[in-house]
Image (cartoon, rainbow, N blue to C red):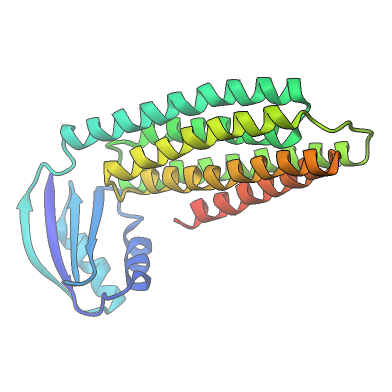
Length: 261
């Protein structure tokens, strides 16, 4: 494995970083990109010819200059093992809470809780895809992140259809106590997942995708808790359906962000 270090004179904000990522995403032998915006340094870990990368950067006309090329083991077994351990942990947590939330969602009659359980299942699949991406080429990582984004959109559309069906049907208010207690437990679980992912310190696209999904989950858990409180206060199932619909809209927004990575 090689590491090419470039000084990019006009790279001083995330806009240039994104431009460079888009330019280099089609080069299969690139393993990782590391940006140091304050110093205008780009480090490219790759397994091919440095000249191809140099030429691609030159086309952007950002004042790029190759500083050094050296052998590296940066994307070595240690980094891959660290990522895999984190992803297996959050995968297990999400599968567990999918089972818990879906079971209690059915028992309590809560659409918001069921929506959150489906989101947990989608996240588990995302983490599974991310495990497949560890150590893979940059282009493959981008492809797997896209698959997870489209999957989230599909689940959201199914969920919105169910919300509409219940809205126009005769629904009794769900059990608000179950909604609140289970969502508090899910909130703690997602906070733990987010902590583990951030502690991994990876900037790879599949890991960034995982963090986006988990951040959305924290917001969703708070929404379900709010729905439970409103169901109790208003003695109506409408807040449950409204929050359930909002949950799926949040899922779509997260999926769009993934597709933009």
